[in-house]
Image 1 (tube, helix red, strand yellow):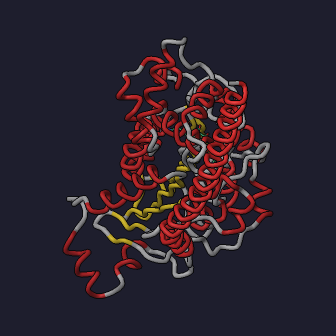
Image 2 (cartoon, rainbow, N blue to C red):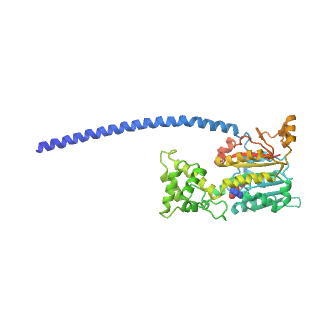
Image 3 (tube, rainbow, N blue to C red):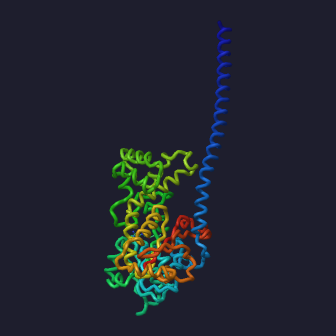
Length: 427
Ligand SMILES: C[S@@+](CC[C@H](N)C(=O)[O-])C[C@H]1O[C@@H](n2cnc3c(N)ncnc32)[C@H](O)[C@@H]1O
């Protein structure tokens, strides 16, 4: 019995050892085959990505600014702290000293980096108007503008700054002086999105990496915060925002987790939201730091919704174009594809609108005789940055393809990497 039991125990040990070693072998084989499957999958993924990357690289090569990056100019107008105006040289090319600017509007004055450079470049300027919804930015801008206009005399330009959303640009110009809209503005600039000052202040809630309240308002007087959307908006609206404004493929799972979090007290800080995103992002997704990419998309989506950025942009592009004088230019720097798409499509829509005030026969006759581009818009031959244009009845798009920052600027300022500059000129 004892022998039998010993035998049976050693047999069972042998058996279990054999089964363990078999299992180990199976596991090793499975791991090996999983690894080889993984490498096949990653090879396939790379092969799939390569053409896309090639297209991106080719597109970048086509649109990259060939202007030399002037670090001295950036230092001079770099403004406060670590705020660096994006594509400053390219913006100065759009509003060159050779082109008269009597009236100029900066819709997003921020730390007044672009604004002060343009003021200094145009001593003929009569009226400058700067808008921003952020009182902190505006205060900094005012101090900076005063230092640029250090010699106020009767012939100095009138510089106005307003705590105002650029969606009201037209009515605001009428309030300042009706003549401004009648005569028209010579140059308008929109440098969209957040300033470094806003991103770097955790209390504003824009930063993925620093904990703060779930705020995300550009205008601190506005009533809607990111926290309100996350904790009280209908489930499908939360999902729509993540999908449409963040282009986030994992939107449905995130929507469900956000709604579930409500029963445990809701989300109140950017840290709460980041934790939720981390727990919802599989490790395999976009590498170890995949959650950061997801969080960036989710934060972008919420910021767009809180500030109603896309509708505001579209309406403001039409309104700003209306305010331009003949020959006046509207330049827009955008920072993500949703914004850029709106700028591109709205510009195309603007120039294709039939305008009763434009003498179509005259345009067609002129086009037959000479280069319409030069006749109608007085574009200077020396404006080498203008490569391909799109001509319409009311205006000319001076950037058929957007201009993107030079390689040097991209390497020095990571925020510039996604910037795209588009310009339209009124006929
Ligand atoms: C990228 S920063 C502009 C930086 C500025 N060009 C400079 O060189 O210092 C964008 C600014 O636009 C402001 N802003 C965003 N949306 C706005 C809107 N709808 N109306 C007015 N200002 C807005 C933000 O508050 C922020 O200060």
